[in-house]
Length: 133
Image (cartoon, rainbow, N blue to C red):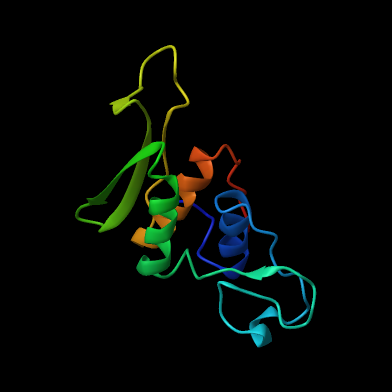
C-alpha cells in the first residue's frame, strides 16, 4: 500500500499538474465553495474537485489524459485494492518497450479507485508522487 492518502492536498496537486490550474492558496479555501471554480476571496486560484475521493471527479482526470494515455483500472483480490495504469498512445498504438520505459506507469495498490487514478495520473504527467507521513 502507498503511504499517500486521499486528501485536499492531493486534489490540489492533481489540479496543478494534470489540469495545469493555479490552485487557491487561501487560509480557508473550503469557504470559497467546492470546485472547479475560482476563489471568492480574490486570490485568483481555483478550488480543485475532490479527484482523490470522488470517482466522478477522478474520471475527469482520465478524460483529460485520454488524448495521449490509455487507462486500465484493476481490482486486486482478495484485498480489494486498486491499481491504475496508464500507457502512452501514439497514433492509436501503445508504446511500451525497452526504448520507452517511462511510457507505462502505474500506482502501488491502494484502497480506492479514485486514489489509484490520481496517483497513476501524477506519474503519467511526470510528477514525482510525494510521500507523506
